[in-house]
Length: 330
Image 1 (cartoon, helix red, strand yellow):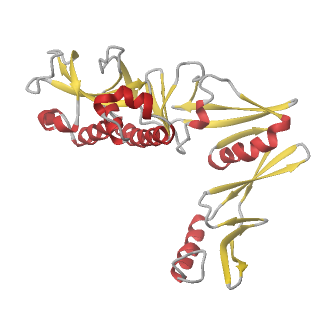
Image 2 (cartoon, one colour; image 1 turned 45 degrees about the vertical axis):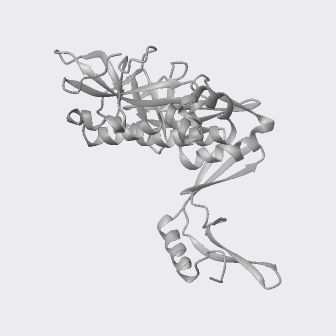
Image 3 (cartoon, helix red, strand yellow; image 1 turned 180 degrees about the vertical axis):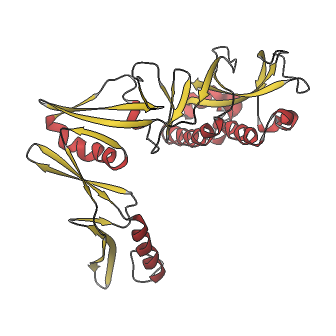
């Protein structure tokens, strides 16, 4: 394959593609342009070690993007996580499992989360099956979508599902080939548009619904399910609830120190804050805390709106009194 001639007109482009073991990745490329300005079929990968050669057509953002994309090239992932880049297949088959797999995926997600916001205004494409990096145009949107989690009560079960609005309009994303390129925060690719969400939505809260209309919660399992999963949604996202109640708790914070004897001359203490009838640990850093209550068949979530600034003042003060916030000794 002929390489791009840096003395001729070219353009830096970015491509999304799916790797068999690593999932969705983003790569950087140089593509020669024709006299009319359109992209030719001549292309090559953009790496940090060839940036200088192509510096005339790239800006500071491109330089940062090429470095980030270079960190998630499959061969670089193999090298970073203990494999030999010359023996990729061996790495995927024998070493890419367990903790290595988890660490690699977490690393890639962090990098993609850094890459995607910088692609706004850049030429972005879906890669073709023949590895051509400019196959399908993708528009990276500056506008953020909103998500609303809907809960409905039905006889014998409860159900929930998300609705998404983009540019003020509800969009149909289920069974439409939508893809989550990044999970934390979520970035969704749908119909040639790539967008993220307000409130930094966790992609795992949307993934199940890409090819499922709703999730049904049997009555006998709803208490555990609501305590474990739904409380997290109530704390972080907009909710439309029909079948349970949400009560916002907005009270003045009252601070206290709870001392516990550990036996002998040893004791520990816990910094706490109370909002009305609810007491929370100051070590819990959630901005909003949801406490669930069952009253017969009814579920009530008490959504406690925390006074972050006042809590931080108390944490700073107690931190100056002793280096260890859970001990009265240095």
